[in-house]
Image 1 (cartoon, one colour):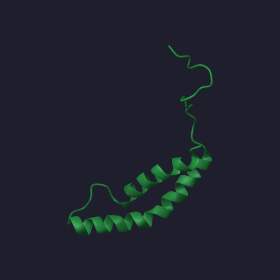
Image 2: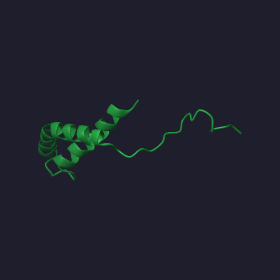
Image 3: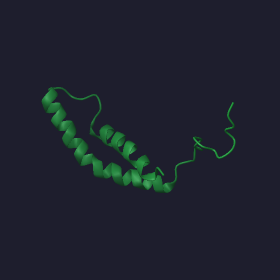
Image 4: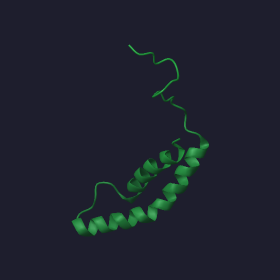
Length: 73
């Protein structure tokens, strides 16, 4: 049995998101909206049907995947 109490390797504490995180998220979200809109329009044209998620949902998802990478050590 190994001792996991020393050093804390592999153990990440969960911190409450800070204002800085939300500020970066908002900026990235606003920057990604035009690209998400273009991608949504192209997908609608090529598939000839409306995608399940709209351009804002796509932008939200992209901002949600980009922003944590900025704060990763």
